[in-house]
Length: 364
Image (cartoon, rainbow, N blue to C red; front, side):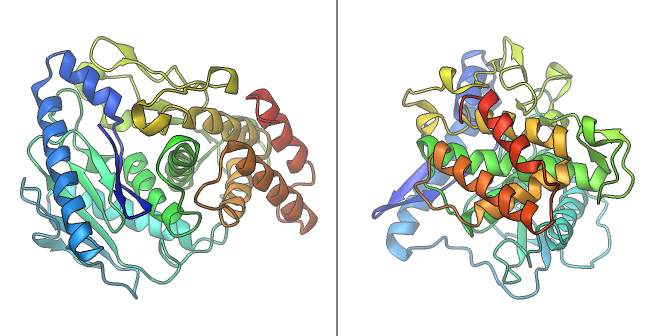
């Protein structure tokens, strides 16, 4: 099950939060909602591909200019922007999915505006932030489609409502930031970089909002107030339903350890280049191999702090390109660390910490 649509010579990213191999494992385990999610996703992708050929764009138009948050209710259909239920500064609706999504998107926008990143929305041009909730029927996924994020309700057993998770929302919006900067092709190592940077945004935004940081940096004087709560480095743990309580989708500190059960299977993420996945599945391992880069970010963050690590990674992202592979990304990240240290924007030892982190995952 591919997660990209090829239009002309370009790969158009359709990034789902739950990887295809996880849904396949769930379907094999007899989870009917997983089978339904696969079919709904396939129908949407085929429809979207046809619309892209005809118009070159999604049918839905995303307004730009004010960086407003707009939450739409798909009313359990696969229609985008079906009913606007909460716009910028509107009062709460008492629908948890709507209100959680609104709060999380607002938090993400505020983080991006913070001086660490300094962006005016995803595109740095005030793009309005559009979120669809109650998409599909018991839809076990969330995605960024190039213009907006969409969140399913989950089945309530394996996965809960995706709108409840700041990780999920920040990850999917992170794909938008990546799209408007490096715009990596969504396959093989460039696609794994797409997923990696989205995971970085997911965990960094969550830490920023919840006033957490990397463990070894907790005693330092850091920019995100005086933070004492330790980050867990888990991605997607908030959406695990009662059948999978305690599991997660990815673990940045220990790739490969996020889950191991009869429903999802075993987490296949490697933590070192010697174990990199080279098969055709998962678009050449976009979700799988992102674990290697995730581990390097974690190792850097626990040494110099999440704020400094995220500043380095974002500055590197701005100088990357659609076909970049891991080694090229490493070069730009080290270069960014060196330049930021020279300008006193990160600690002077940051460059060495970054090199050490990449050496530990086999990328230096």
